[in-house]
Length: 108
Image 1 (cartoon, rainbow, N blue to C red):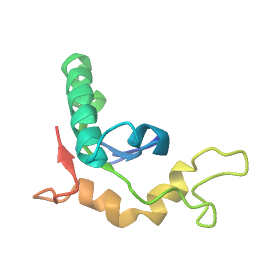
Image 2: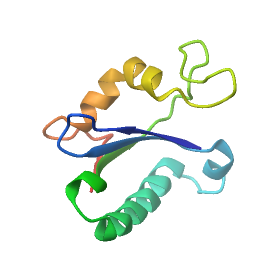
Image 3: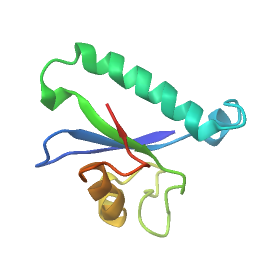
């Protein structure tokens, strides 16, 4: 459904991904695992042709909690407020850069 990009002043690009509820219904009994595999495969292919490290995604996480209107993550026009999401989910952003990466973070 949407992606929030992380990585300012970090060693690599990260991504926090909100899946589409409709798409999740098509992914069988383990939709998060299936989506994770698809995203990992596609980002690996993207990274193979992306050039330098500043253009490659190093890690990602699938977010299961929807964006919060009350938390300012969605604007009045329905767009994702990247800054509000990064601030509100600072712990998740930090987990993208933790060593070792936690279980909910996928390393590419």
